[in-house]
Amino acid sequence: FPAWSLEKAQRLAREVEEGLRGDAAPDLVASIDKRTADRWRSGLSGTDRLRTALAGFVRLRTVGKDGT
Image (cartoon, helix red, strand yellow):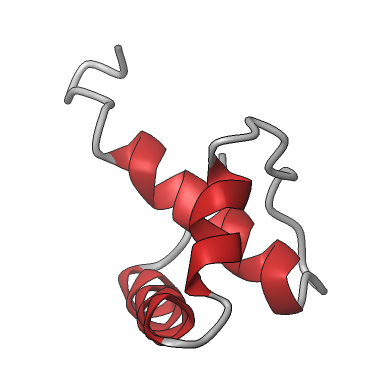
């Protein structure tokens, strides 16, 4: 999983928030359920970037301090 800095995570969170407020929000939300999110890599753009970042944030919420 990406080792985002706090600043990068905050920027990505704002991008995802904008995506969820936009016209393509239903497609973005539907795409996260497919469990096909790409691994994070530099150069992702558009829906792929938002979907992958969103998937990362969801996973971050489910990992405990001990990594489990």
